[in-house]
Length: 348
Image 1 (tube, rainbow, N blue to C red):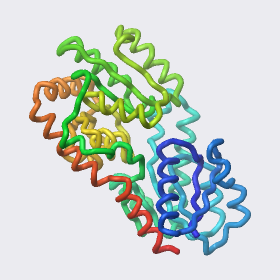
Image 2: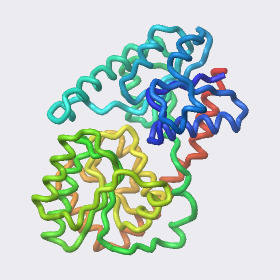
Image 3: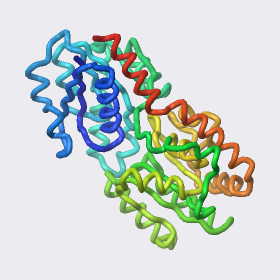
């Protein structure tokens, strides 16, 4: 049996990934029980509490721990011997939050301490990217496998590369991800302003919640300051069908993020046939490869210029669509699911 542990089980990237693993293991007739510190209402009938894990954890139990945030779950696994496998999604460096949310900065520092001290106790580890694997190697983790995260198959519904995209607006920018300091949402706003002043009409849709209120307030004030209220749309949550539609109706996926452990939205965009312009930082290059326009640093003018060049080069757009679709197949959920089953089967 695999005992699957998380800090929080919810319909987010890590939660969806965990659910995907559970389904793949179930399909392979491998029994799994999931435990979490915080359990959202929709999972209360299928997920057990951290206290339940503490009461029945045995030294020969195999525990797969989804590590993405600080949690008492990490402390529990540190103090209770088991055959621990850490599935590492990355921890954003604390300095990005020190100005905006000091308590978050402190929590991130705690998470890094927890990650480091689990290294000598872990039997194995799974990193979702080469970037993450390098961090685990530096901390002393062993038996490391690189397997991409599992996400929705909805973006692979049909071969958009073959039939071509039908976009409703040739200047529709899209970003999917949290409104957080390391995501550089303010730079996306500045890029849009530069583009509109020097190149032509454009609009930006941002899909993601804000967990850093002061930074979110600064972004809203910047939108007002630049008089962009009519062309910037902020959407906190969308269902999967609407998200697929947003990818299909946009003309470019744009990211100024400086820190990503994998960046699932890049793959969603590529699978949707949407050209990508992104800052070449952290794991972005690992994920996008040659299937995106990568700018060297998060500077608004560089991003605006790159989108302007791309908008006038239909051949480059088609090349990116083809490369992106091929690249996205490398991370197809069914492929990743099979790799998780193969890896975890070795431990039971």
